[in-house]
Length: 230
Image (tube, rainbow, N blue to C red):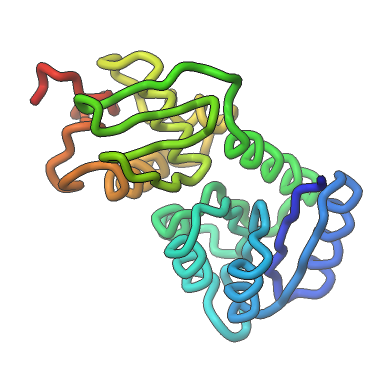
């Protein structure tokens, strides 16, 4: 079955151009120019990925992203004319998995969407990995995470960061290493990984302000906490 992409874009020419490229790539496509309608479609149709413009005529794209993320871990690819670093980081903090500024190449958007969907589709079958004394269990075969016996939904980027760290517990990963591991290309800002780690900690740490699972190594990056750290 074809994967479904929801395109939320108020400019008709851009919306139809993206629809054409995604359909040629084999995706089923839903479109809307309304932020309010996008929230409803996301809830009812459960698309595999959302391509979201931030400047919408009714509900700001930031609000759409926050509402979608509150209800699910549906991957979000942000499209916007807001090119400043603070704008990009704000989008990532809201839970976006990638960020493309206008003007853009439609082919690049489709390729980036495909990369996000591959990350969200799971890894090759592997063993279950326990972290934090068994508080967190990563099941790569099922592409699932349980935190204190409760299933938790992670975005593709959050999943990628957690599983990358889990491959070598105790090893320090720089921000660039993590971004390249989970995205496969160099991202524009190292601050992006900080936003994703912040969101990830909210989901898996007992106290996100005093992390014991994902530890910050000042001046170096991040590593998983080991039993002896606690």
